Image 1 (cartoon, rainbow, N blue to C red):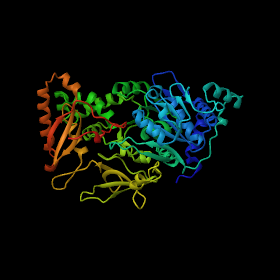
Image 2: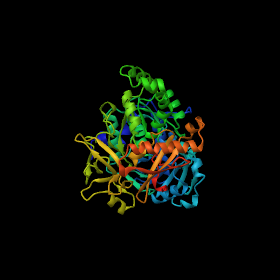
Image 3: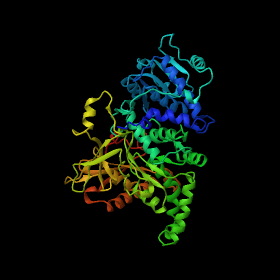
Image 4: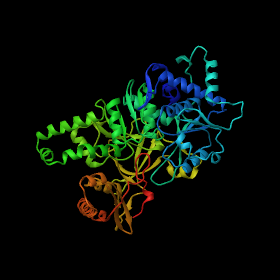
Length: 555
């Protein structure tokens, strides 16, 4: 347990607000709305006053649901530094799921984007005492007594009375709470369709934040473009919490992060660190790099020693500039990076690395900077913070990855059976991921326990590895490998943009895909062969971290 005063999560922000008072803290990208640390601290103090007026006590739950913006950040920080428990709800959740989470978590207040609230029936969330707009921070509904007014005008008047000489850095003093206490309840949106409330203690968040500070991933005046949803553990921990603990400046993107939007933001902000999921980088690779290196003159030159370095240097420069040109590295999380993409980027000496984590560890388990990264790994287990082991390994050393340490959750909220199932008898968290670990603590993931398939003679088949090979084939956008009886079936969503650009007919596309199937099978063992390849006309439905919701599909 992290116990030193400087390791207490709440005190970390008390210190950061005071030390970075005049610096810019958060910007709603694409707008003129920028808050300094002083302004952010003042807005947090106003929410503390609102909580007091509403009768919120330490340990009460406050939910927030909406796009990344400065008010989302304010709500999260105000809740945690008040001593209440934040319940971040992914904005992608359907109304029914959101209603369930609000009720299950027993949230008393809800901060929500107006558009999302329009789809929620207030009568179905009877325990909410009030709902406030994340767009404007105006009161939408209140079930409080008239004596407990929390409208914006009342709070401003009370704030002026409390701080007649203005709100200064000396007024930033937050509640005393042990790191062992609960900070948040994050409801997972996994590939299995079962959402559980992960109880994250202050200690787990503090461990991730301190790792960011001590490894110098974040530092004073660093710049981040936060396009991953802050309601997800990865973006929350590093684009938001670690960045603001260091005195950095986070630019919040509230729109769908298409490559076009992101490249524009990178060019303008020039971030010092970039956090991404594989899909984003893979799309940029396919759009920017693959067309260049597939052309005859370039593809020939890349096979020639010395000359290839000239071409690779120019490609690297183009790619570095596309991401703003001032970043130390890109950290991929959420899923493994496509092997072909990773190999080419390493050949470029492009600063990209892969980390590993999960919501249940808030999120980080392993990470290594790009200059010490080992191919196809997801980094080294965090020394001094986390431990890992491979349980019941097979003849190839593959088994379930199990972990313990500072970042591990308390359990699942009001779900003792799921909590008990997630931990071993000797206290290790079952990740549900299959992998191997080398002598230096580098982890190599092979797939999910629940998605592993069995071959005709009992061989282990990891569909994710086969999908990675299919995704490298021409005209493939994404794929999903399933099993029907004992045969493997690949559902493939074509890259229709490329198909249309080449004026391909349906018959030609089917011929190409059949050729793709044969080429992939040449790279696979006999028991891994794709028997049938089926075209799927739409992108697969995904979780917010862009993992395919496998449970929705069948062969």
